Structure formats: structure tokens, C-alpha cells
Image (cartoon, rainbow, N blue to C red; front, side):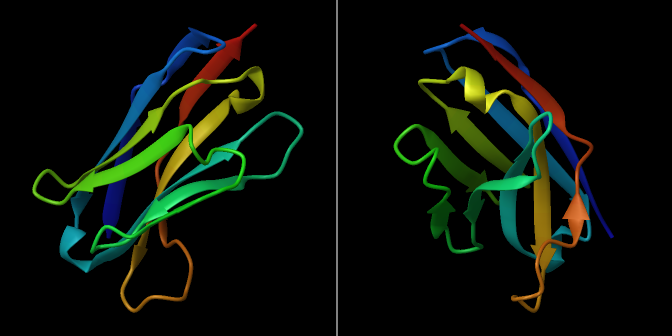
Length: 119
């Protein structure tokens, strides 16, 4: 089992920045991919970004150029640097982890951290 705990959410004005962190514990040796997803009111959960064990990243179109995902394997932590935030980025952001073997989707989820962006 893997436990994921997010931190760093909060309120910010449009154009501002926030950095989310997610620390993993438990069977971290079995983690392959880490990612961030978000759930906004009235919408379905959507992918924000993912990062593989070797550092390969993938981003949703609506955050490309503004958000950066990174991971520190020594600290068992994945980060999401969010710049030039927009009101439409308001959501609960969830950290997720996929175990080996790849291709089965995310197996573990954190409880989420709220990001609120005001005009």
C-alpha cells in the first residue's frame, strides 16, 4: 500500500503562483508513475500532469507552459509548480500514484488539496 498526502493548496489571485507537494509513504519502491489530477465544481476529474520514474513528463493542454511537475525520489515527493494561475484552475487537486507494471492507471490517491483562484 502507498499513502499520499498533499499540501500547499490555498487561495491566490489570478496571475499568481502556488506550489503543491505530495509526499508518499508505504510501499514507495513499487511506485512507477506519479501524477496530479483535479476536480472542479460541476466537472469531471481531469488529468493535470504526470511524471514517470525516469522523469518523463506529460501535461494537459490547458496547463502547458504554466504548470511544472517534478519529483524528488530521495524525498518520495512530487511537486506541482503552478504559475499564471487562472480562475478556471480553481479545483481540488489530487496526487495519484501508479504501481508497476505500467498501463493500469492510477492505483493510489491522496485526499486532495483545494486551490482557489480569484479574479
